[in-house]
Image 1 (tube, rainbow, N blue to C red):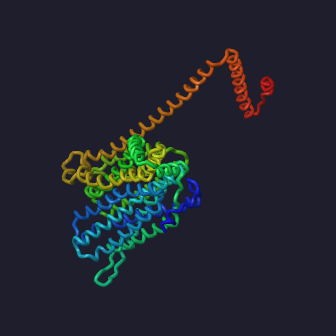
Image 2: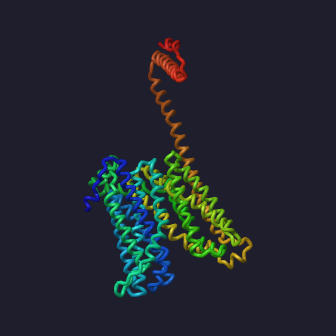
Image 3: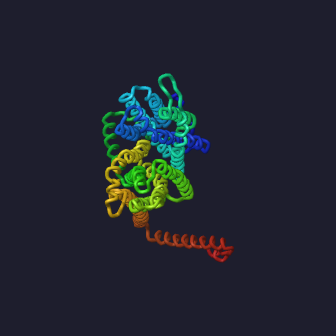
Length: 525
């Protein structure tokens, strides 16, 4: 099985069209499974924990455990893919771990209530987080196997499949709500049967990765690098080379074109947590909405995000650059979160609450895939980082994970106002000024993108000026060695060539207009 997994079918660096379809199916199914798994567990997890003797505090710990496990596992999977050069083995391993987590989740209710059952649920979510970390592998695979001009389109499509998977989560919850089966002293109910869904989904993803995900080949330069790195004979040289390469990696990593995409993925995930964490309590106080109305409002944005991801795919395929897509999304994000801060008041209408969410949802696709593509290009342009693409894709994904388990607690503590505080205030705002962190982060990222753009223009201009200067210098050194007669002959020949070139250009132009230049042609001859 291991030999089969490591076998590379394609013989070039870019996959052919049939293989392209195969790996897209595999990665898309893996993303859908990840999204469904998360959306199936989240709505019922609090009830499952309480039913098995847990508390709200233990529920909060278990919720954070999933993101924390994913955060810790992403660099491990990224390094694994870099060292082995393959994706299927780490991919399948993570999915099998997630399937085991589903089994533990299913059987947790069979254990005694209290510490044993709650501990099993915690272990199940930790294992599930390990499986969710394979999203970094998917992006690393795209970075290695897909041509640069198609990466934004591909990443958008994969992200769109995850969003559709999240949208289908409630339907799966309705399906398991009908489950009631007594098996001796233990019963299968809507809460623990979620584990069966997790097992089935992850095993389907294992099959798709095993049969449809072709390993991309290393190109020639990468193969030479791998051979050189494996054939260093002396230990002292290895030590000095390691120190030098580490210093080079650090210098390359702290460049702006690497740091700004990391800031971007952290900021738009942290900003979106302001909606996910703050909308329910704010809408409950201002509009009187309960869980059903809140879930409908938040669920509707899944389709809006999917539509805008399709728009990003189309714009990217028509040649709109990733920096332009990202900059447009950052502007929209800044406006949306400013409207959210000023619009969410105790006296606001439904649309004043919903329009900022709509704007933030529309900006999300313009931030996600272009950020990933810009980061991938930046890593590929640095020779010291290119061979660590999997590890760096994991680092980028870790930025999203940090926002996922850090931002909710801070938002609940510092950004949300208590209803009594809202009523006592003059502005009646549901959010404190601390919530302005969202538009500020978007603006900072926009400034970073502007800095990168200006730096690249300066580099291009400097290179363009340098080349003519070098040519003039070389011409001066060579001409000083020539005889005066030869120099005059060369100048005469140059003038003739220039005149011939000018007449040739005019001749081509006249031919395009249907005219002739017979007289001048004879003159040239």
